[in-house]
Image (tube, rainbow, N blue to C red; front, side):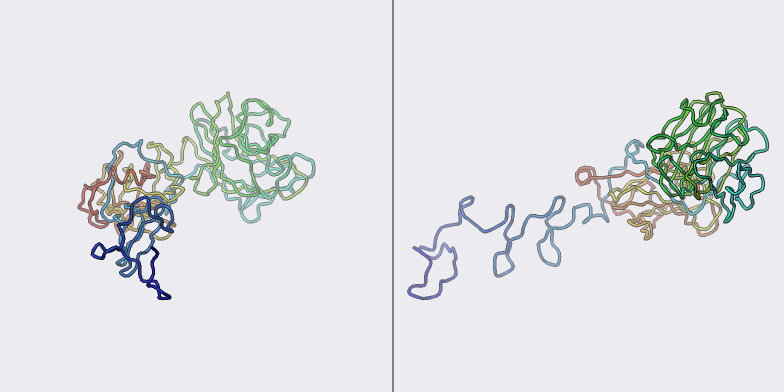
Length: 448
């Protein structure tokens, strides 16, 4: 029998009421047809049945504004009280991609050139040398190989050393046209055909990739003991920051993308190969005739293999090196985890040069707006050891260690790592409930 009020009357509301004779039986599961989406559920708005479609992965059914709704995952909803198990295994922590700091207290270079004048620089053609604007600007002639050099130390370099400089390419081409070769040599004014000892960067292979070279009495472009950096770098018209290192029996070439020498693009280590008597910083060019680029900020450190104090030393996975700030108010350093992820744990390896008496652990999604996660009395930390610090669950890309003493102080850290990429499954199985104050310095630094 159909639903009807009889005759031409209006269809009455459909209902199932066991107190009414012949009102119909209960709706049978898996047999009653609804016009609903797969996995929907039914809720009431007080008068009518409404469809609530399935939420997205990781969301949870909750209440917002007095209504049932799908909401963010549990770690977002309960972030103010959730913490994870406090791992004290450094292998569980992730190396940040890079670091940025408020200042660097670098070791003073033995020699530094700001290119304020052309004094001491020698070239095969004076028209190819220009120091305007405080940089070594290099020109060359169509189809020719030209060189520019300077005796940077006044004597043969002995022992370990570090050389840093920037190379800006303004003209590129099919044969690596701009700044084709630059580094240190034992020969004044060496040409492409001269045999020499060298430690250099070359742009020479068929794909115009950066190569590194450590040659013993060979031509600059000889194939022996040279090869591509790892990963390979195909240079473009931009600025690269280059580091040449002699470390005991090895020659190391590093290329970075930033002035802080913190974001490594490529590296290569070569055997010593008997290279000796290095003394001259030399640039060789080959081009079709153009303003090919310039060299700037040339610095030389004698007797060292790393420049401790640089931002990058806090994320180089080596606790024997360190970042240190200058003495300043609120010195700080932040690390970039490459993408936004969830964590409640950070590990830091404080250095004994620190004079700050209080630090903050802060998080950010944009490296501009910072949120305090912990405030810690520095004496609660153990220097020259890993310290594992907990805070309430947070999703962020950037993490900052912030000197909070209020006056001038030094902050120095060997390494920073983050327990990165915590999943919802981790949160469900490994979490505890505790609200950790971002300002109470009396809390144990593990957050328990």
